[in-house]
Image (cartoon, rainbow, N blue to C red; front, side):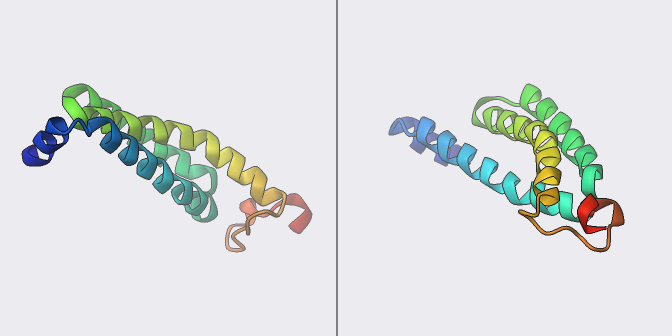
Length: 111
């Protein structure tokens, strides 16, 4: 890992690497929100909250690039809490499928 950081620093590529990692982290959270809402509904907000707090603490106790990426992951978790509510609305509108095994997840017009 140290060799990678030295390489990125030597060729001044740290910003590009962090930007790419941020893009990938945010991209990973999109399907996590969709699947979380589908299988767990609003209950998955607790997982995002716990994950956000854990990575926020990691961001505080680590340094350098790891700290930055933990911070990005933390706030992606916090943002996902809001997105789960938005995803529920998208399911209600019929833009995404509702999980038939969860009666509380079915939109009112589909019950």
